[in-house]
Image (cartoon, rainbow, N blue to C red; front, side, top):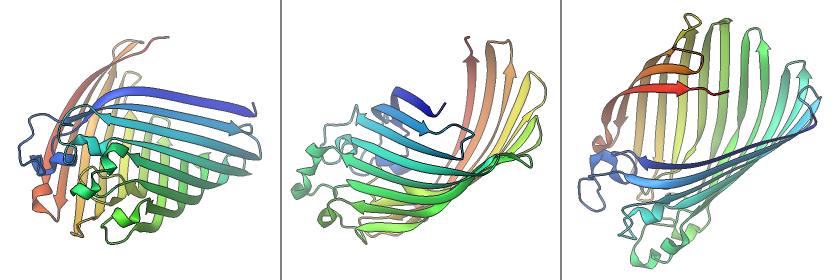
Length: 307
């Protein structure tokens, strides 16, 4: 009970949506063409977590390693402007110390170190006018608390500082070579009834850019309501707003505000199968007009459960 391992491995094939990354605005600006298909990639994810200390112990230590390897599968013919430059690996190590101060409440101190490495075969093209090397190191330090079922609420709060340093600053033509600013991650769930819950999320962190910018500073806030109308039917409604501040290599000011809202229904047909339907509306308003868009998304799903 004092030693616990969680291991999660995942292999997937995905794509950057048309209108994102190299094709923002619905156009491949680097190659001056309209994209006919999205940029596809193969991705490997691994998440290993070790916990020392029982759940009800006074103190606990959690060490977690999160790894991601992404390799693009198409549009690699142009080494400078194609997807080759987007291949990368990310490895983040998190160390969290918990101290229980109440039966169901713990304070925490957390440190994170993240290495981001892009395809080395691309680095040799700097002299040929390729975009700057994006290799970087990120670090974050948080203090906070986690609690369960206290006055009908469950949640976690983390407040601290984040920093991003580019590993080859002489190659980075950004306004500055490194960035540091406040950071936070907060999730609070309130359950006024056993069958109904409200969850508030808010965060601030770095987002890796696929469009040639140095770094994206994202602030996010969202609210979700989940309700079980019966033993067979449930619903969810959410609204989310996030803002992106682009720290550009070209020193061009850009900021985006994205508003998302949606609703969904689930219906358990049997003990082993459930139907779902979701609608999502998304609107982006950017200081660069070519980046504005609205999107309507309708998704139908079937979930199978096997014991």
